[in-house]
Length: 267
Image (cartoon, rainbow, N blue to C red; front, side, top):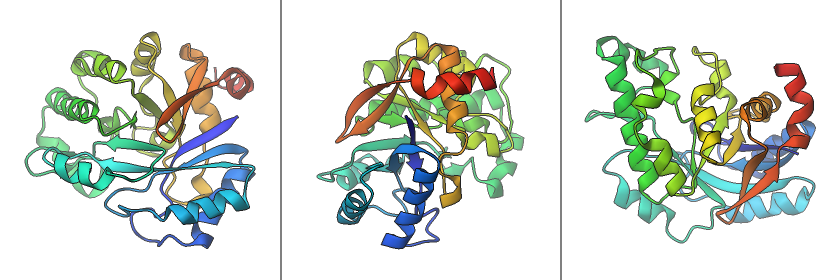
C-alpha cells in the first residue's frame, strides 16, 4: 500500500480549509493509489483544524484512510505555547519540524534567507541544527521527526561525517519511540535528494527506528510524488516495514508489497 503522511492542504496560508480544497488533495491521492493520506498543516497556518470536516471526507471517500496531524514549528522557547496548542486535540500524529535556528530565529530553509549560510561554519551549523532537533525529540510533543537533515536543503555540506555531527540524536529518537520521515520534497530543492541521506537512513534502520513516507505536498498535484522511490530506498537500506499512525498509535505495515517493484527500478 502507498501512503503519504505529509500534506499541507493550506500551503503557507494561501488557502482556507474548505470541503472543495480538502477534496482536491484526497482525489489526487486516490488517483495516485494512496491508501492512507495524512494532513499536517503548519501550526502557524492552522492551529485548530476542523476535525468534523476531515471526518466528513472520510465518510465520503472510505477507500482512502484520512489521518489528521499537524506540523509544529519547534522553536526553542515555544514549549509552553506548543503544549497548550496540542492539549486535548485529537491528532493522529504530530510532526516536530525545525525550520529556525539561533537567537534571531533564522529561517534557514527559506530561499529569501539563503545568504545566511555564507558567514557560517557549516559543520557548526549542522551541529546546532541537530541539537535543536534533539530538543524537539526530547520534548515529548511529537510522534515523528520529519525531514531529519533539512539543513542540507541548499546543498551546503559539512566536512565531518553527518552522523558525527548528529551526536546522540538517533539514540534519543529510538529511546523516545519516535519515527523519522522519508521525505521526497528534497528531490525538488537545490540539494536534489530525499531527506534524510542514505547514511542517516541506514543508521536508523540498524537501530530499528520506524520510518514513515511523505511528499511534503503544498499543492494537490504534489500528493504522492516519488513515494515509490522513497519506499524503494527504504527497502534498499534494509527496512521491511514502515509506520502509519492512528490516534497517536504507531502501526507498522509490511513494506515488501509496496516497494518490491519500485526497488527493481531504482537500484
